[in-house]
Image 1 (cartoon, one colour):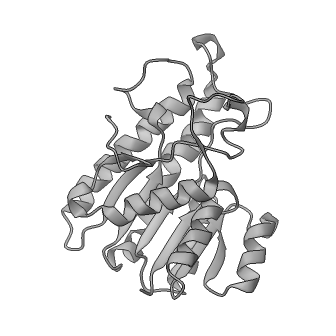
Image 2 (cartoon, helix red, strand yellow; image 1 turned 30 degrees about the vertical axis):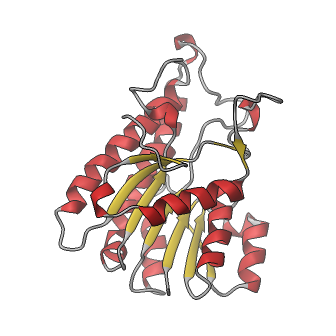
Image 3 (cartoon, helix red, strand yellow; image 1 turned 90 degrees about the vertical axis):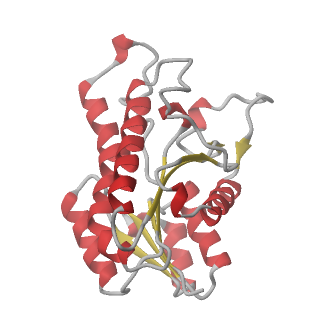
Length: 250
């Protein structure tokens, strides 16, 4: 199938693994690989140099003009998108932004920064790429959420900004799924939990030798999540799914 896919946040980690796996599964297709600084993403640009089916595009999900320009650029190269996966997310940043362990560590600027990327970004991407998705073949729109964003599953507390932003993302996706289900061309919309993945995002919080926690490579995580996406249909729109296809409570 000549699948047209877009991976937002494709410079490294799971996003880059999605690009590779989508090309392996759909060698006749095209993957638009967006990230904030494509020129600085050496592995991604290296792949694109040797594979015309990978097309890097600049997109900063915290900048509305950047999202709009990316949508216009991609629309000039394709009339449709069949799959859009939002991967970009933020848990920690340098020494100034870390997951909060207690209320006294909550900071307004950190909350705004995390919400901007984790909750607002995917919704604005959806807004600007909606026309291309509506023209797609059985179009699907997915965003990487996290089990810690589940209100019903929260038993440990802490991580205020990350938990709240992912819960907000989930509500945005659920609301979007309801709106898009009313259209003539349905866009199946879901939230995905990848599990614990060996990336820079999780690195400071993975416990060495913790046999209770399965840690997936980015390649394994991307493959598992694409299997979930391949197995869903319009009746699953608005759902929250784990890497193994199990539903997660809101």
